[in-house]
Amino acid sequence: MSGGQDPRLGVLGAGVMGTGIAALAIGSGVPVVLVDIDGPALDRARTGIARQLRLARLMGAFPAGTPDAALETTTDVARVADATAVVESVTERLDSKATALATATAVLAAGTLVVSNTSAIPIDELADHVARPEDLVGIHFMNPPYLIRTVELIHGRRSSAAAVRAAEELLAALGQTPVHVGDGPGFVINRILQRSINEAARIVQDGLATPESVDAAFTGCLGHRSGPLATADLIGLDNVVDSLAVLLERTGDEGYRPCDLLVAKVGAGELGRKTGRGFFEYPDTL
Image (cartoon, rainbow, N blue to C red; front, side):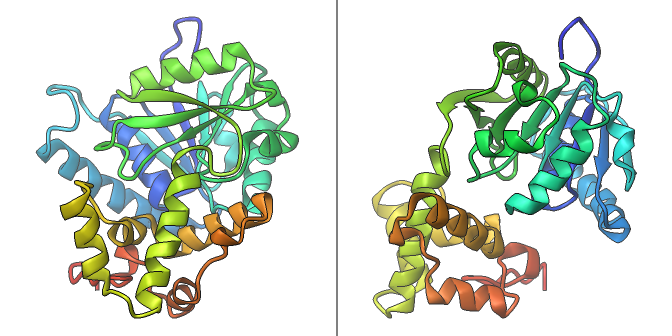
């Protein structure tokens, strides 16, 4: 992102967050090459990104008069070789992220910013799998990123000052505001949020309250814009369980062990908004 070069963003992963980050960049005037190993997922991503861009424009999420930038979709990771920055946003599992990062960084020039959008895995752990650990930082984007404009910018132990500056430049181009945080399992947001979701699900599991009551208490009593269970549905309950597993393994804290209800919902395919049913139902998706 340095030297006055116009930004071109590579995004690894065409899931919920990958497509959201791509839409954010395209709507901000930054061209994107979106990479996924699943061709049909890329076809769905094109449709989903177009829909997100229309919604974001209707909500005034992008500056008026900024035309949408170009989108390229591909299964060939070598297409990111000339990107000014690459954001990894694949499944929240170490093996998946390690493979994506290793493959992409093998084709990047030294000094190219590499970002992991991990929500729980420590950046220094992921740095073991990139070609140049000093080029890697973490940026934890919120969902949807074109509406939630603040992110966690995570400094890994081996992240260089140049990489952090490049990340700040990228975020400025995307209209995002960074909160600088240190490295560690779950960072700040998910260290707190995932445990809250797990406890909220356990309360429903134990019959102490309905999902509606749990979330009403958070929105009505505490002023939260969304309750923990609606937030979980937005994140995806499969992603919640994966993040809890990461936190449990790396902290040893049993409070992060996914409760039976969360595990059961994931096993039943009730993953939240993306499947039409989680703790709540979403008829437009069904």
